Length: 391
Ligand code: PLP
Image 1 (spheres, rainbow, N blue to C red):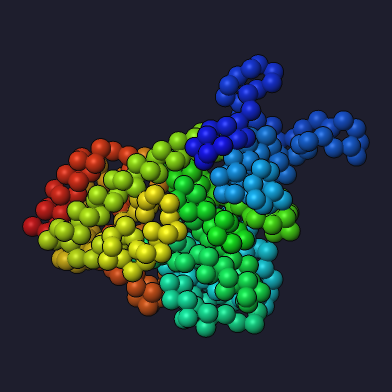
Image 2 (cartoon, rainbow, N blue to C red; image 1 turned 45 degrees about the vertical axis):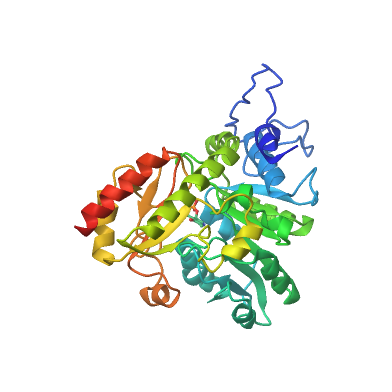
């Protein structure tokens, strides 16, 4: 079955008791067992629940692991948030291990790596994963995990994922990718040889800004089993209502992402020609340094996130964020409504200022999440806001 069909049917079982086409949301925290020491399919909801299983099944299928895929012994896990999912991966490390992360990195991941994992004795360093020679120099004898984003947040840099996976394996490390921006509609890292893919389900998977969730999908049995063990041991599970909402969001994931990509491509091209706009960072523009890799690696679109700079600079950027009417000023992304934000003061404020500068996150950057509103309305909104901000 094709992606769009699986998104609707995998994990979606009509209720056997009532025939309800939409399965009920299971809120029970515990389940009756057949006998003392005998276990039914579910025992305690932290370890598993039918509503969570449903979303994990469909996510596994879309990411390319679990039953019916090329990696049948892997699987997916649903966490309480994207950060809980990343923490699940980093919890598999031990004191003395090293993480090599790409330098175009979500602020929350930066904070977890530098201000929490260091307390557990895990070392982290950042290197530019778009330059494979420089990136390889970042490996140490104790590197156990490589962590990249593609497109990266907020610079929209594109990483050659297959090449990064090869490097990681050559150096004895697992390769993991935060695929939140690309979604499995455009890029499926497990098919490119990576071991773990992570999503903030709060974004495109949910798609409606009404749930918090995180997802991991692992290719191999041992990695999947370890992450599952960690999830149960640490307890950061996605709650049943969020699981239900996420399963519902998944059904339209491909349609939403394809349409959002179309609008984003047009907006990026329009911004790129706009006299008041400086740089536009979007892999769908031929001048973007990662365009050729993205064309190969992303199927049928370049994502719906755009970063740009106003020629007039930081204060004009702040005014722009206040002047849009349809683009709402908020962090987060990936939902039906369009959002605007300023990474330096919002999504990436948890970086040290010096590290922001070092890794090319300028104060003047503005980030757009392009939603599902009519294209003409979005362009008109930006046009009036740019005029108001640069008057
Ligand atoms: N990864 C990326 C690329 C993100 O943009 C975010 C949140 O903005 C996260 C991870 C963290 O996800 P959550 O907010 O669901 O914890």
